[in-house]
Amino acid sequence: MTRNPSLLLALGDLGAFVAFGVLGLISHEKSFDVAPIIRSIVPFAAAWLLLSPFAGAYSDEALRGRKPLGEIALIWLPIGVVALIARAAIFDRHLLNAFFVIALIGDGVFIVGWRALYNRLVAPAIAA
View (cartoon, rainbow, N blue to C red):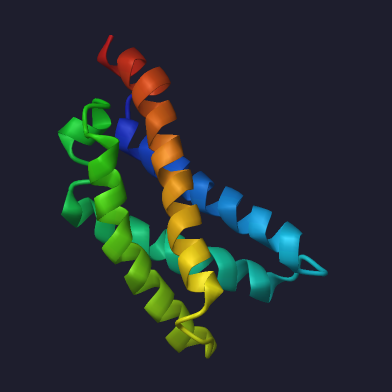
């Protein structure tokens, strides 16, 4: 399928953040301008892609589809909080509001959902 499963996994992770961010923008924004897109997607994707490898999100176990999804969720929670703090600081936004909870849970669901698909459909083809 692919010779570089870590790249595929990272692209899927990025896609999960983009999907959740676009869904939120469609729900709340009047226009698709660059600033809301950056504010809604970049802090979360950047924090995840920069920090999650150190927490094992791209370990051999994860690449083979054997990392429990609960562990992915536990990796996401502190990274998601870091992303929300960075977003609040960089974009001068309030930290503790409804968005905090929605983004933390929503992005987490999308990441875990993507990883479930990867584990079920992609990882077995890589191992073959």
